[in-house]
Amino acid sequence: MNPIVKEKIINIQRDFSRYPAGRYRSDGPYNGERFRDDFLIPALNNKADNIRIELDGVRGYNSSFLDEAFGGLVNCGFPVKELLERLQFISQDKSLIEEIKGYIKDRVSIAIQTT
Image (cartoon, rainbow, N blue to C red; front, side, top):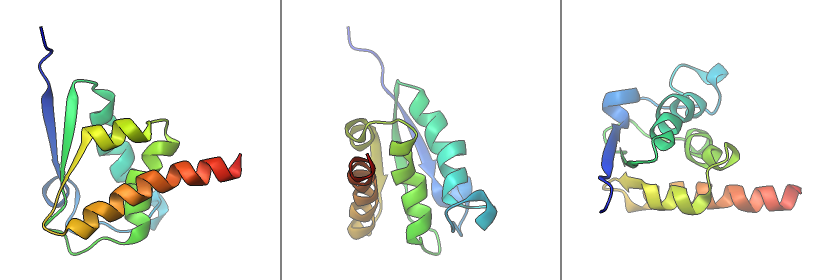
């Protein structure tokens, strides 16, 4: 018998902010660290969930927000393979999706280089 897989939907514009920016909490209220800690990690900790992240509708993303929010998950102990399987990115801008996946994959390279 297959377990029921629930899907968690996070719409960044609706659930977080239309103006995400910055890496750390000290950078303002809608930073990547807060999005990761308050939205992504709780969703990922529910092992039954696949997480659909709707990216459209915001005023733009800076690289520090994306790297900390998504790449930072690797530093929090989530395996790259699991992240790429469970996180489903939805956007009309396909290059944004590839950029986010790049930040996730790059964190592994950075970790290897520093050990």
